[in-house]
Length: 120
Ligand SMILES: [Ca+2]
Image (cartoon, rainbow, N blue to C red):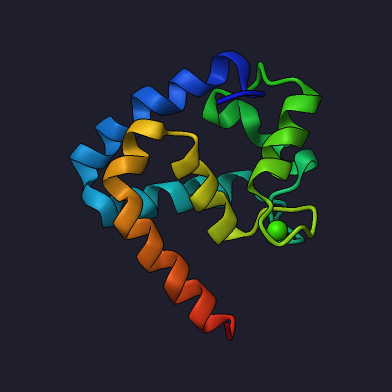
């Protein structure tokens, strides 16, 4: 994936292994735990600033500021400048091309549920 430099292989290696171990549902729970670690506690969303503050906990301390910003921009589907829980989970899947194929259906189900809940 362009723009993520040497960090992308971490996700590519980690996620398929996690998916195998945890199953689809378990993996999503793990990914959403990552969200709680990285989010701005007051705002309840992930911003480039909250990523920067908490990235070291996930071994991402080597990311540059502009990489953090482009990570948020990459996942920000509704363009409000921050990642909510759903956007973060989707981004994690997208950063892992190997997993993406396996989880395509799962992801579509989640998105459909999410869009239905949002009133689309
Ligand atoms: Ca957003």
